[in-house]
Image 1 (spheres, helix red, strand yellow):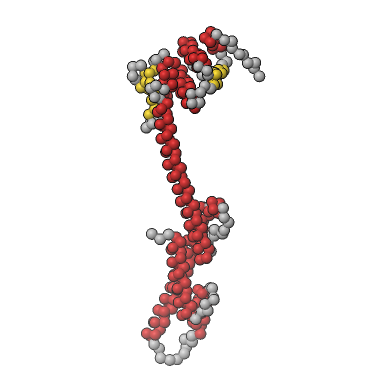
Image 2 (cartoon, rainbow, N blue to C red):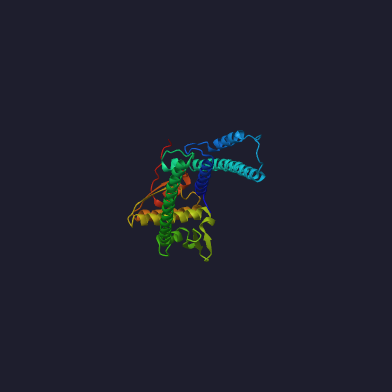
Length: 295
């Protein structure tokens, strides 16, 4: 199927051929531009010069040939006028489509997007080819980026699976902090979700856990990630009321685990606005609580 630029070039070639034939038939100079108007005027002048009163032998056949030729020329002129009008409409539509593509902005180049003749059409085709190359290059970049992202995603999934190995800090920490109510953690890449296994082997999505159990899972993941990032070295954790949804027993268990981390060399800063939590921390870690003055 021809595109609009090919149709326009083919149409302009046909018009030039017919205009050339019309010029030769009516002896119109090549440098004349308004060929159709001049052809109309010459026909009018020729008609006015004919003396229909001249006496002579009437030739019906010759008259019919002349009338046929005259009608053909008039029909050809009308067809050319119609084609020229359609050509102008196509050119206008083509120019509007060029403007809509915002080629100037994308190519960072200023040129006239209005197509008025064959030369400007050729320029616009060149710019369109540049635009197509730009889009194809961007598409290649995007495809390469997607391949890289796929590789990163695969690598991250492998790392997540390592995080939930049976002997990992995360799994063991989660078992302990939940009083062994939960015995395993797994990541299902096809679903993009973390699942936990209860003592009775029932599996649950992490999103279906209670708020407090979800917080315990989150804490276990944080501790394991911190250990991996630090490559076994001890660091520090800053926590803001992460045990807020725990009941008393779970809160004590959580504080005990933080104490164990502290005994292993971790520095832990825990912020809370609850006096009850402060009292439990004092009871479990046998240390004073630092109270900050309100601003």
